[in-house]
Amino acid sequence: MSESTMVVIIVLLSAVAVAMALILISLLSQMKSIRSQVHFISRNDTNKRISFYGKSRSFRRLAKDINEIIDSYDERHDKILREDKEIKDTLTNMSHDIRTPLTSLKGYFELLDQTDDPEERKKYTNIIYGRIESLSEILETMFLYTKVSNVNFKISIDPIECSKIILETMFEYYDDFQEKGYDVDIDVDEGIRILGNEQSLKRIMQNLIRNSLVHGGGDVKLSVKPEEGKKVKIILDNLLEEGQNPDPNRVFDRYYKGDASRHTGSSGVGLSVVKKLVESMNGDITAFVGDGRFRIEMTFKTI
Image 1: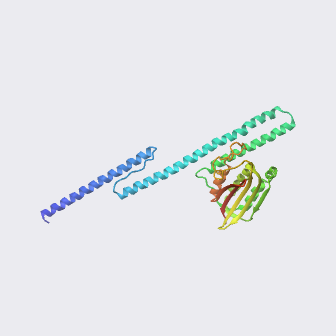
Image 2: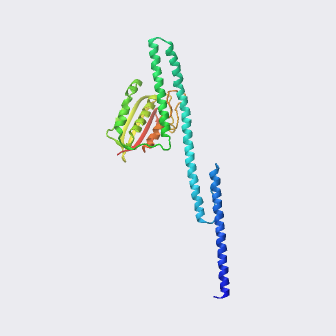
Image 3: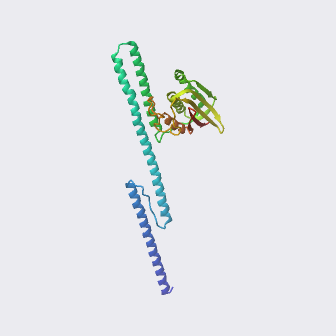
């Protein structure tokens, strides 16, 4: 090999070495830039994302992957903050509801202590029991709402006798409907089974029935019928009390009350709990208002 050829080879190798060194320096600089940006984002509350303008496809993909992780984290973080705020706001609002029966309890205990008349003592005792029952219901609803609002809330799903559970729950409130003077029209197909949770379905029906008793104004209709596509539709329809006009798009919202001026002892989260429980059983729920009536429709898959 001639001397001139050796010189050319050495020059070429030197040029390649210099080029490789420059590329390596550039890559290290780009990596340093990405690391610096990651450290800044991790230590500060910022909307900043990783910026990369180099030509390296690998680093460009890396920057994109890091930004997707950041976006995913921010979404989860925002969701947790919203849910935490919802729970805190609900507990704050419910604490005001708790004060009402507590305040009246104190007054009626004082009246009970001041009288020796048997009839008055009986009257005050019955009122006290009623206030205690109302307080107990609010506390139970508060506990259940906090439970179902947890992001990790899950229920066991098993085959259950949908028709049987609904009928049994409905009949538990027969005396309450009688006392209110409400007519109850029941049209339930027997033997319908779904994948769900017995206690959750029972709680769903209890909350819906209590809502009808507290906010309703008359007759109630219950329908449980199979639908095409191996589904069952459950409908609870009741006449609204005069002057009531709930917003069907908001009735499932946390702490929504159709009429804030009414003090019924209702916590205002009963239907919100219903929606969360229905969805936990992979069902759908919708509300309708029209012709002076309020209707809840739920759909579940049958087995």
